[in-house]
Length: 68
Image 1 (tube, rainbow, N blue to C red):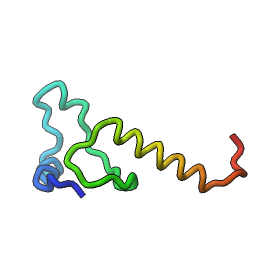
Image 2: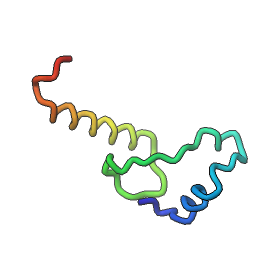
Image 3: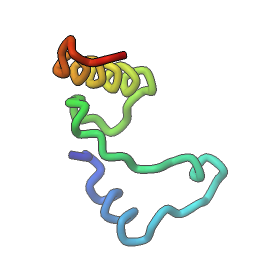
Image 4: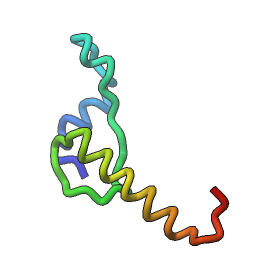
């Protein structure tokens, strides 16, 4: 789903190239289950909101019988 398909292929072939300290924290993630619109970048708040919505939806599917 990435718009940067060439970049993803390059990363898959060469691996993560560490050229600065910030590169150590970058990790590609597969988050298609969140149902986000296709973008090249997402903010942390967008990801947090989408994850919380999925957790809420999952818990509601379990019903009232879930012991908390």
